[in-house]
Structures are given as C-alpha cells and as structure tokens.
Image (cartoon, rainbow, N blue to C red):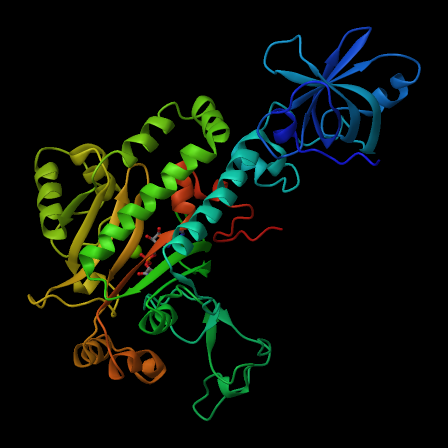
Length: 466
Ligand code: 4AD
Ligand code: MG
C-alpha cells in the first residue's frame, strides 16, 4: 500500500514503531562520520522532526545534496529518540531530494535576518520560525473569528471592495479606473468624464464595509464582514497599512452598551483562543522576543475593560501633562487622540484595556448617533496596551432627519448615499457595530512590533512588492 505523508505536527504526537513519510524543508544538517542528523520542518508546527541517516555508500551522495533550505521527502521508521528535545525521530530508509538549495546563494545567512531584510526576501520569509509562527497564528485567528460569529448566529455578509462611497468620509481612497490616464476624456467643465469610466462613475477601493453592512444588519439582524480594506493615508507608522483586513460586525437592536459588551467579549474570546490553540507558537514568540507576551495576553482575558467618557479621558491626560508627562501632540477637549495618549491611558493610568466613548462629533464619522448635548456622539474606541486603538465603532444614527442634517453639515453628497439613507426611511431601527483591525489584533497576540510583520505581503506608502 502506498504510504501517505504525515504532517510533522502529527508525527511528533505518534508512538514509536510506525513506518512514516515526511516531506518538508531542511532547517539544519549536522552529524559525525557515521550518522547525519537533519532537522526537518514542514510548516505545520514550529517544531522540527529529527531525521537520522546512517552514512554509507548509498546515502552519502544523497546527503551531499542536502543542505539548509533543501526540500526533501523522508521515508522511515518512527523510533524513540535518545537525544533530548524530542520524544520520537525518524530513522530514514529512503530520502528523495525534491529541490536542492545552494548554500552559497542561500539568502538567509545568520548575519542578516532583521525583519526589514526579511521583507525583501518573499520566498524565505515564511520559512523562518518567526513568520511560520505569525502566519499560523493569523490563520488560526481568522478561523476563530468565523467560528465566534457563526456560533452566535451572525450572518457572514460579503460587502464590495469596489465602491462609490467613502464610508469614513476621510478622503483616503484609492481610485479604481480604466480611463486612459495619458488621455483622460473630459466633460464640458474640463473635468474627467467618469461616465466613460468602467462603472460609469467615479469609484474607489473600499475603506470599510460598514455602510453595506448596515443594510445587511437591518434585514438579517446580526451580520459581520471580514475582508480587505484599503486606505491611502500617508501614515508610515508601525500600526498602519494601506491594505489591511477588518472584521465589522453590525447588529440591529444593539445600543452602545451592548456594542461594548460584544466587543469586549469578542476580543477576549480571540485572545483566549490563541492561548489555548496556538501555544507552541506563542511560547516561541514569548521566549524569543517578548517575555511579557503571555502575561499580557492572560491579563487582558482576566480583567474588566475600563469604560470611560472621552471628556474624562481628556481630564486625565491634561492632569498628566500638568504633572510633567511629555506628549508630542497637544491635549485639549476636541483633540483627536494620538496613540501616545491612548497608550498613556491604557498602560500608565489604568493598566488595562480602555473603551473610550462619547467622542466629540467633529472628529468622528457622519453615521454615529448624536448625543443630546449636541456636541458628542456615541462612538467607542477600544484601546489596548502596546497598540492604542484596536477597535473603532459606534451606535448608529437611526433618525432620518438627524442623519441627513449631519451629511449636509459635513458637505457630503446625499445623492451618493440615498441607498444607505433609505435604511432610515423604511423601518429604521436602532443598531450598532464596530470594526476590529485584524493586523492590530495580530500585533497584540504575537507581540510583534511592526504591523508589516503580521501580514504576508504588506502594502505601505511606496511599497507594493510581490
Ligand atoms: O476606526 P475605523 O476607521 O472604523 C471604521 O472603519 C468603522 N467603519 C468600523 C465600524 O464601525 N464598522 O477602523 C476600524 C479599525 C481601527 O480601530 C484599527 O484597528 C483598524 O481598523 N485600522 C487600521 N489597521 C491597519 N492599518 C490602517 N491604516 C488602519 N486603519 C484602521
Ligand atoms: Mg478609528
């Protein structure tokens, strides 16, 4: 009978005795005159399986072809390991070399494996222990997100990537066009004639699936989106990407408090899932880079998040500034909080995550429910240690008149938004939602320092390689 390949992850849990077939990439080869030891990794786990090969006239020519990075298949018996570090190893009886790897040209020399350098070597990056761990965690987190909502009866709604509306009203959209930029058709006013464009109007990549998500929620009850979003903001920070993934649940009949409850439960569930299901990878990242990682993850799960009004938050920050804390950006009522302010509240003042609510309406998007004071809106930002804002959300303005007035006040085009405003005309309902930045979550869960290093192919200003 043909022997099927077993993943290294599963091999390492098996009892000695079985005949097995493993396939993967060589991490190291060492040995003595009689025996060679090969550490083989197949990406299924951070752990390698040790291959033991007797050196003789048959195996020497094969072993000569095998160096770090080579791709091989190994058939052999699983035996108890005499060495420490693993319970079982494979005593090889047959080795197939699928792809040699020239040691002289191997791009991963020990001397330069900085994250910046690795970003330039696309094929090697996922083969490192660090990115293997990060990418497995990323996949596990995506699964946990779907599972969380699925098990609570939320409908997964696919919102469009190409859109004509700027949901956040921040004017940071990437235009999508098939017009010939060398020869743009013009209308009578001399402006580009978008009626000639592919969609017959000006379109862009979406900055958020929320507006379409609201149409789903006000029919299906509870929905979530999970997809890529695009922002042409020129922010070269360790927390911004031009292409990032966002999870946006939207719930009919939730007020701001229920929205906060869901956000807190959701994010705690995800962190707990990571600790329970990705322990080896998290342990590796903890031991290698960030000895406080596991402690930080556990502390978030075990604590009630602080819920604080923006106005109170500003008072705390003003007090801190008065007492000598140096902030780069000024603090005053009405200011948009910078990550330094958010992190001060979370890391220094409270020592735990904070949900900030009641923001000034002028620094938030048009769709947020207006408070009675006429100055603030029912926004909520969830602020996390090391990250700052990880979630942004709000209760939505359900009142037709107030929504229209706000759109006009901001000088936005009502015409483009009629399809959205219709939800308030025909059976409007109170509802709320939020957006979790997937890579910000991964920054937190992995302890990585730069958001470029938690996504396989980062897109940032002046960088769209691969
Ligand atoms: O606060 P934001 O802009 O909110 C929205 O887009 C709402 N439509 C969400 C909603 O209510 N449905 O973005 C939400 C989250 C932020 O808290 C942050 O975690 C992440 O998305 N985010 C980014 N992540 C990486 N790079 C960027 N440039 C990001 N911009 C926002
Ligand atoms: Mg925000």
